[in-house]
Length: 185
Image (tube, rainbow, N blue to C red):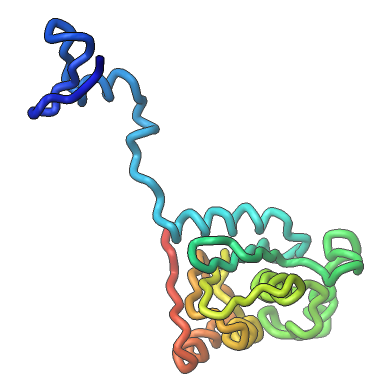
């Protein structure tokens, strides 16, 4: 017979075998089980970081996760359009632009890769899943082009880990009422 008395003492078998509940927990479970659970934001960000490991872009490992009602509805990473060769296979088109004097952080339209945020939104569209009211977790803050897609996809909150070269998206998010916050490590 196992039960707790009014003081929280665990009664096992009878009075002579009593053991405080806390002592039993101390003996039974190691420190790793007593650590506090990660927050939902940290949980989904860690998943976005794993997604970024699929990146084929040579310049930036980007990952994104779209979440609605605490459920993942889509993921995306930096990579080429479906069926096209990856940058990791044929090289980066933007390297050629830099050789022509076009600075880093510009020329997005000339890039072979699609950013993680756009790929996640496109996955929602491809599979007929609404992202309206969702939260996006991105390993890097969105660029201006991705910000426009995020706004039009109805995503209401963006959580990111590190800063991108392009910070123009922040003003656009504010104007559109999309919350954005950096999740520190």
